[in-house]
Amino acid sequence: MSAVHVAVRRVYEDALPTDGARVLVDRLWPRGLSKAKAHLDEWLRSVSPSTELRQWYGHDPERFAEFSTRYEAELRQPEPAAGFAHLVALAAAGPLTLLTASKAVTISEATVLATLLQEGGDRAGIESVGTPG
Image (cartoon, rainbow, N blue to C red; front, side):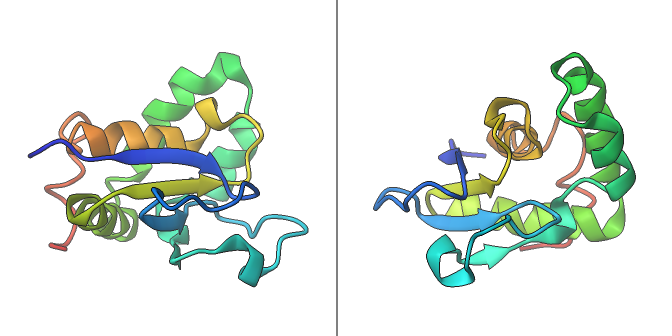
């Protein structure tokens, strides 16, 4: 797979011309943000962590490694895997920006997704499970 450009940003930040496709990957809509102001191309909830995993994690930096492992396992399930395959197709088509409301972007699900996309999904075996883009 050729190199892909995947950025991770907060959804509250202004859109940039270099963002490419802008996809919100949070399960919940960001507080206080109108859909018009978000400048999204898509809201892809299917790739967000389960409510149970999100609540267990609580963006605790000490749990990030375990969160990543559990999240990658969730992404192997059919619906999340299909969503991930869609992200693979978007990333292959051009720049992709994954958006999150998290204040701690570097330990968010968007960062886990970006890493997997840049690695082609191979580490977690996700891409082969998803539906073709």
